[in-house]
Image (cartoon, rainbow, N blue to C red; front, side):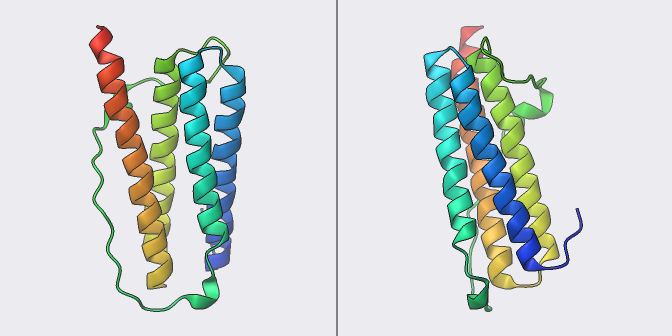
Length: 152
């Protein structure tokens, strides 16, 4: 991906979060498993929150402000799991794997974009979002470990 302006990057990030929100909402309406519906609706709400945060970011206020980014833990479980499309008969395991993969892609996007912007404030925003996406992935991986691996 090649961007020329901060606005283009923000617009792409907004589009990504909107697509993720729509995906999770549609998947929640597709699956039959009640616990999967709850999980997917939670993911949809998180992506909508990210989209709103990005839409409300005022580029005219960009300045050099000190900022810290929290550490997030990545178990890397999704690195070794095969992704499947979400279908009505998708199991909670299939959904969690797909969600881990999506969260990892979102993390990678924000991490990569934080490297190419010169504005410290926008870089901080992207680093925060990357950390949050990695945190979400970590939460899903931990839940996956607790729920799926305990079944074996």
